Image (cartoon, rainbow, N blue to C red; front, side, top):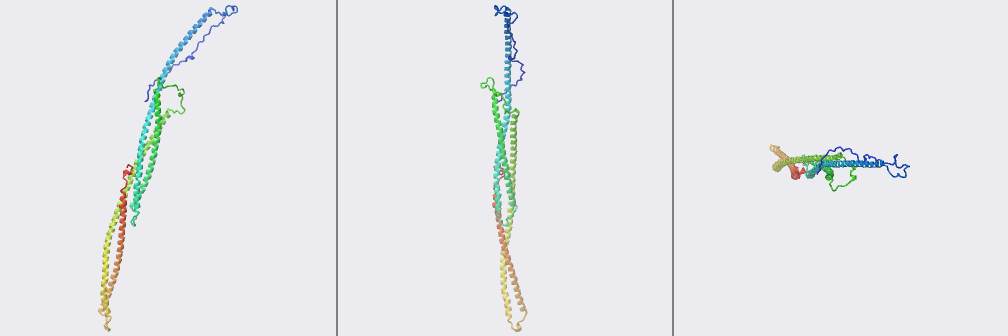
Length: 447
């Protein structure tokens, strides 16, 4: 507790002269050296050691005067001593009161700066704790990005197992590559931000340590000055310290003393504000990166859904064409069988006609006539041969068409299998795996 004192106005001390410097009155002793001295040659035998009455009176007067002068000097010395003792006692009391007041004022100054340092230390401690929480969020967010990156790379690897012609660089692959690049950039950003957070926490702790050391010194000084303020003339633990009144060479001035604490608080506040700004930046970064990742994830999912719709549509169309192709193959097989039967059916009429012509070639002599029957039989054979030739040609065309239909069927079945495989990869493997994509809260480092 600071000890307060009343500040008294010091009155100018009266100009006193020490007793040792007072002028001393010199008294001359009576000497036997006058013209009527008893040491004359004529009375040398009778009055050598005797004084005259005048000399006796003079000697008494001298003794009276000396006693008076000594008493007067002693009285003045006693009065001056009493005055000096009273003045010095009053001066010592006023000086002690003034010193106590100054110590009390100094205690107030120390208490002020100690309180300011204490407040700044508490603020820095709270800010460092908040920054530590942000650091944990950054670490969680950075760890969480491994899951979407694994999902994205797995999707790309799975889609590499698509079979031609579905092994294309479609919009899904473009968006997946964008997602992988986005995740890598976000990871680099989070790593740099995490490093800044760690450095800022270290700066906060360093300046907090400086403030704590300053606060500790002021606490010790406050206790010392408070003990000094409680000292009085009746204290039992006071003693002489002759060498304590010297100033130390390394002693600071009030200005440098206050500037030291002010600079410590200023630097601590500057780092604390930098930490607050960095925390706000981390909040924005985590929010933006989480939103960007989820937005890109939705874009990829939409691309997957659209691609699966395209594959479903293509597969359904292929299946429709395959169904028609299979029906056409059946019809063509019936047609080929009919053509073959039709060719076979022409064999008997051709045999009849050729047999007739052959038998008629044996007609004798003039009977071997090119009659109408002969012409008709010949034309019949030609017609039958043309029919058989046309049927065989059509049969070849039908067989070729059937082979083409079979190739088409195989191609359609292969394409359907390719589309089924692509659908399985995109829908069953990739899209099912993407359901494990982290939420916005996890990407923001809250879980």
